[in-house]
Length: 203
Image 1: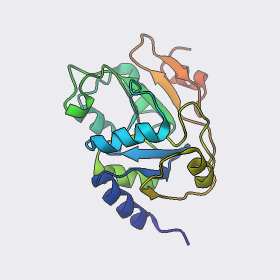
Image 2 (image 1 turned 45 degrees about the horizontal axis):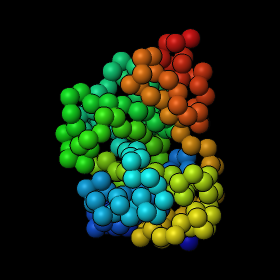
Image 3 (image 1 turned 45 degrees about the vertical axis):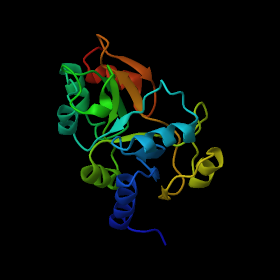
């Protein structure tokens, strides 16, 4: 029998705080999560995915207030998207900073991909841990697996905690770069590009 959300949350939070890597379902695909304040875990995650070192991981947060606390700039375009029906949900925004990041683990970055998931378990975890680095659960350059078994078959290193959410779709979030003027859709996923353009008033 699958554990309840409260039990899952406690397991994941404990693991992340101690430098673990968590494999867990999101509202889109399976994700691999680490605390950005655990540099060894971040390095292990990169090795687990075979991801180039110059590729940064996106961030998940529980609310737009978390973005402001990180020093992230939210302009009028980002505001429209963050207050749309797709947030929380499958919309990732590439955003810059008002001046500079307010946390050391973002130093050196000029932009960051951020998302607020529409998933009760993930939101509970994020409210306890604060922002997390969360990336799709697959080897770099490979499509995400639909099940935990398919994900683990791709990975050379096993996650420290695994939450099985059953079979998931493999359609990622739609990525909108808000640092461009006007913003551009860099990856079409769950949210169609014309929907993004309507929200932004571009059509």
